[in-house]
Length: 187
Image 1 (tube, rainbow, N blue to C red):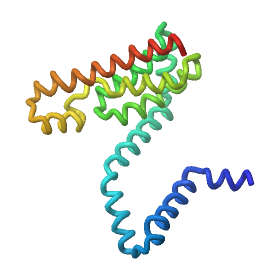
Image 2: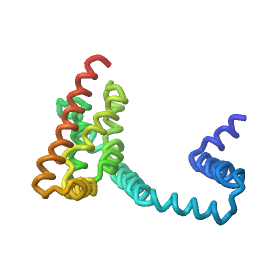
Image 3: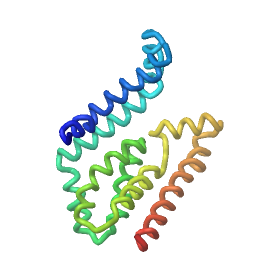
């Protein structure tokens, strides 16, 4: 019984079973043709394809850094400093966000880099996750598609977008860090 649960609970098997159930329940059980089901699946994948590539690329980038020993180096670097692991996690995510542009890639990569730091400290893991999340939204600027979307949608100049959107994301990130540090006093 335990082996069956392990097989069904494995990520690949669980996704396959979910897909098969969705095809049956949303397709065949509703008397849809194979062609209609195929068209629906194609349209669904088209809508999320770019996000899947970004998340996959971010995960791959994180793993390259972890396998290359960068995460251990980052942990040892911050271990020698007298700095809160929450601030360190926020800082790593913030630097990655500014450099890479993508909040998703920054948060995935930062999580992989600060994981060894979590093992060396007594910080609540949920607060570390929040710190990485807060750091990953800082200073949205020209290397992020969201920056350009805000600029175009609201008809702003480049300067106006920097003054409004980049400032807003920075304030949001720093406010998040301060809130997390406040929570850490009680949790």
